[in-house]
Image (cartoon, rainbow, N blue to C red; front, side):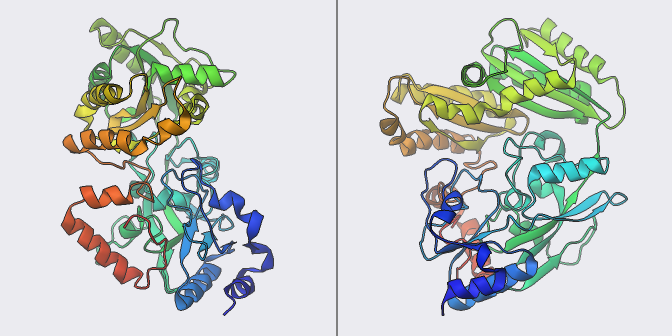
Length: 464
C-alpha cells in the first residue's frame, strides 16, 4: 500500500508534507534530538484523526502526535524515517464555552494563549500559564501534564480538566467530553491519557475548567540572601494570605544578569543587587485590599530579616516587566553557551537544601560552571539548569550532560523527589525511568500500554 497516497486521500494533498517542508516539525527546540519522518500529516478534525490512526494501525505504521513542538525532552519528534508525524495544529477550534458550568471545550491544536483569550472574552480565567503559551498547544499541555507558574493555586493541567476526547490506536474515538464534576461510573480513564505523552491515544479535544477572573492582582519583586529565606517568606505569606497566593517564583541573580545582558527594555527592579529574588503574586476574584496584605507580609518579612528589599508593582505594565524577567530566563540562557537543563521536583521543605547541595557537587566536578536554578518553589519544581563555564568549549561541556544530570538526579532521588516535574520523559529520560521507577509501577505501565496500543504504533520509544 502507498501510505502517502492513502493519507492524502484522507486529509488532502496539501496537508501531507514531505522533504524540506517537514523541517519545522522534526527539529525540536534544544536541537538535542534530530528527528526524521516519512511525512507530516495535518488532519482537520477528529474524524480525519480516526481515519489516519485506523490506517496506520492496519499497516503497522508508527505515529508520533505533535502539538506546538515546544517540548524539551524529545517526546514530540520521531526517531524513525518510516514514522508518520501527526500534527494537530489544524484542530484549533473553540467548540463550546459554558459560563454557567464554568467550562469550555477546546480542540487539541488550540494554543494555550488562544485558550486563555477565549476564556477572557467570556469574563473567565483559564489559569495555566507557561513561557511558551503563544506556541504550545492544549493537546501538548495535556500530554505532558504541564504545570507552569500557577500550580500553587490551581494545580497542574490534570487538575484543570473535566473530560477528554481521545482517538485510540485502532481509530476508535473515546467520547469523554463530560462537564460533570461528579461521576463515579467506574475508572476515570482521562487520567491515563494526561501525561502519557501520546503513547496511549491522541487527545483531540478537552473540557477545561474556568475560574472567575481576578478583580485585583498585586505583584511584588523581592530581594533576599538565600533560598531558605524564600521558604520562610512562603510560609509567612501562606499564614497571612492563604489561597490568595497565585504565584511564588524563585529567581537567582545570575538569571537576572543573563536577561539584562541579552535582551532590551528590561531593568533591575531593585536598587541593589541581591543573591536571590522571589516574584510573588496575590490575586482575588473580589477586591480584598491585597496591596495592604502584601505590605503586611513584606513588612514583617523585612523586620524579621527574611528579605533585604522589595517593590510592589504600581501598574500592570510594571507587573508585566517583573514577569518578563522571569519568563525570559530560559530563552536567554542559550546565548551564554551550552546549557544542561534539569526539570525536577523535591519536597518544598527541601528546596533550599537541594539548591545548595547541587551547586556544591556540580562545582566540585566542574569549577566555573554557572548554576541557574529557578522555578516554582511553591510546589517544589526547580529548573536546575547549568550553564557552561565562560572559557569552556560548548561541545566539550555538553558532552558531560549525562554526568552532570546524573549528579542532579542522584540528589533528587536522595530527597525523595522526581526526575521529571512538568516536562515529561520523552527520549531524554526514558532510560533513567527504568532505574528510578518502582518495578511494579513500570510493569503496570507496560500492561496499560499493551492494552491501549497492542501493536505499539503510538509514539514508540517514548516514556517506556
